Image 1 (tube, rainbow, N blue to C red):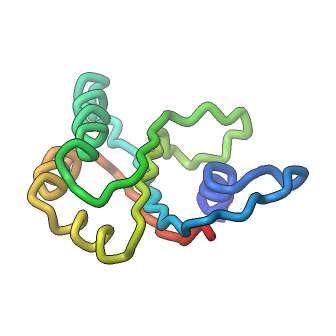
Image 2: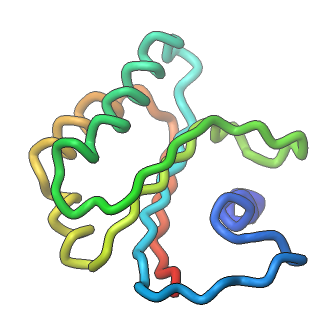
Length: 124
């Protein structure tokens, strides 16, 4: 449950700010990583760099954000890295998932992560 709260904090404005209507809906693809204790900082940096390189390799990505957890709440359950990839359509997201560059990225991260959470939602 607290991991879901982290996603909400990452993706939604604070309660006291009014949401602004979007002229064009955007599909957000949220990826959170908890790395294995044996994963070195150099390996984590390689994962981050590889993920950040995907927008230049895969068409259909309309936005990309990445960062490490800085929350003082202590509720991240060990998830340290967040990536937000935005798409205009589900078709673009689906093409991204099977794209060879994404598959190459997955081969880099799969043995380094302990857990991954992926959630997609529409911002309208």
